[in-house]
Length: 172
Length: 185
Image (cartoon, rainbow over all chains, first blue to last red; front, side, top):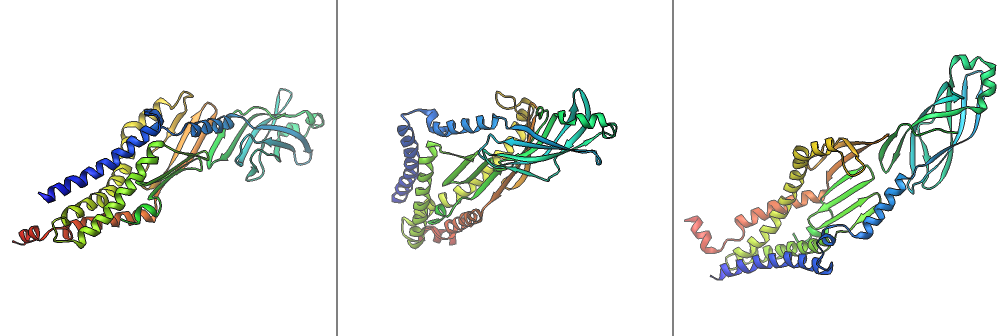
């Protein structure tokens, strides 16, 4: 009898501690079911802010270019402003080089990786290869200062996540 | 059992550096995009489980020392229920969660899209307890992929050892004289 009573008491202790903690949580949250099982409102608000930061697009700006006529290369000096607090690791950028409405070549990121520190602007070089007819034409080479980069795609890493973004827009 | 609740998490999952969850029956830390989450229920429930576990440990020691006394068997059983079942239920939960997701929810998520923005989940197989996989999703012109890593910590093995020892103790340590004699007879 004593054994059974002890067993029952110990089981009740378990139930009381578990139920008591639940009741206390509900009591502290004003008996609001959602507040008890959902993360705190301030956490959710902070996440909303982080996500809106992520939605804010960084901007590529063309700040200069250099043409190497002999090798048929065009170098674009580009800067990128980060909208994020975290570092952005740009692993690849590709795009088409346009002169007016003519597709005259394509470009890529010559470095393995470019690091843009959080909320900073960093400049780097993109290397373009011109198609052969442009490469040999003095007219085109003379006009190259008006070149634009279109259909930009990029591969970058943020938060350990790899993003591939197609049709990012133009670099002018 | 007396120290297990205080020596750290048992298991962790990481999705790139964007999401991290470290977990034990007594502790959790969920971080998403650098923001740490607090769930009010866990703030009270997990310390309660901690108290019960430590109490269970104390009862098991007391019951083992008082073997043969009328209260020995019941106190050892009280400790056993915590020391054995909490680690076992933890493992079952971590196996059952991926099983349910991979077998019943996976298709809904990958085919139906997630959230109002229609995030298209292309690949997501959740590993069982430990392992790695790749999460891949797309949204308009953006494709995102991330490694999913699940691992157990050394404390997990300590918890398994606790469960085994609890089982051994209840089998051999807590019976009173009468039931031992009955068994022998």
